[in-house]
Image (tube, rainbow, N blue to C red; front, side):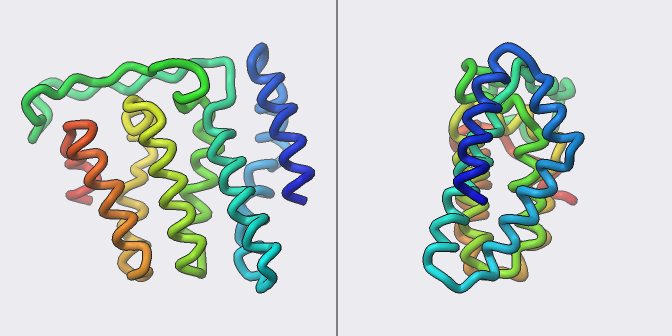
Length: 187
């Protein structure tokens, strides 16, 4: 199944350079729901082969977050937002291949994390979210409306092995992006 999706992923990538149609069809046919369910099924499998397939699937979905024609822009911060660090400048997208263009794919990573039963999958998904954030400084701000950090915080309290990865994400936002995620910290 993962190999099949790997081929489909290449096709989606190539077509998404010129049209959003196949990505939209994939969404309408519940493709993202299928990917999430497949992750959760692979998580329960005991074979080493299944664990490798799960890592590959998470990697493919992470790549899928950058597919699309439409360039997404970070939502502007409100003037006078509390706790803006000195020198903060809202980053602009760096370009295709690094910037999030497919929020539906990112939601697969986030939703799978919230439904994960093993710390192994939880850590893998947190790594994937971190990779998305670090690929382009604008990605966190493009995805800010997803409230990822606050939703992950609710679950990470019940998965102690994943807590260090979560705090790495939080540190990245504060120290690398020079931004204090007040909404996530106060909710």
